[in-house]
Length: 387
Image 1 (cartoon, rainbow, N blue to C red):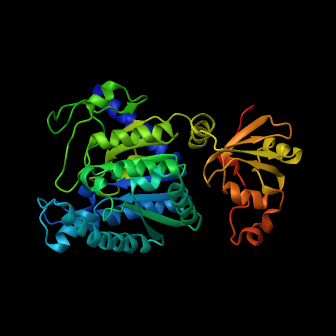
Image 2: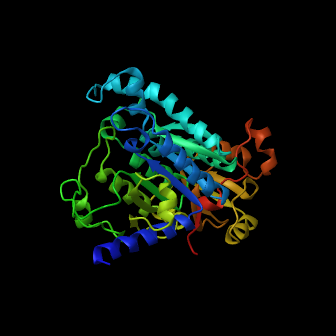
């Protein structure tokens, strides 16, 4: 076996092992896979085969999220628009029509395998604005808790920049980050990242494992385009950067063959981007070191003991609230003497916490008029500063 083949096999084996070990998985599908080249019609045979793969993973207890391109391409064909017609209003009209077609197709193929799905339309702004991020994250977590497969796409009818740059790769990475996913699989029309653009240099070797995204790795990403897709290897590299920093591994592999996830599990050629730590450790490092606290909570001795035992902070243990902050903002948590114990993300505004502090969680609905979280700060969103 040639060395290049051995390297490809090694990368595929590592990627396959990562996929098999992932409990929460985001799969992103490019337009060139969903839509038949030339006709602009749905590639139903391929989509059906992928649904078989997803159903098998779901039966194994995996949480699945799908980010699917293809709405604009399907909408173009439906409305009789040519691929060359790229005026913004035409693209947005195609997106509006195509989103209906795409969601229906996914509902049909997944429903035929006993899986329920729900469409979630997002923009990058939804994943970067803190409060919209929390709302989107809450919706996705609720769907996953109900055993539903979220079908995610960019809201291209309003997100003009995403239409121009084709950022479903980056959107998929943000979804993986916000949901604490273990692995992101980018199904593409190429089998991974090569040392040079394979369309220009067919013999360019595959890079099977990327432990760090260096300038040399970035230089290897070309700007390859397809008839219906607008992303390229550069957007996939940006997605990988987002994910590995969030503790989520990333796989780039070809989706051309039927049953691409099954092929990946068997060791198909791929590029595996090694994550830094786990999603939870990455998230806690971000909370501890990257966010500026907007307020301060003082807690009693009982709440301090609970936090040190790895439990969440409940309103009954909060004795004082200082500062003005919104839901999702970072706050510090102090003991009775004012010593900083922890940092975390508040589930309520400072005004709401003034009303519920010192009270039991089952009183929240009566005090606020709505049923929020039982916790002021969930343990997954809290970091003890002294270990």
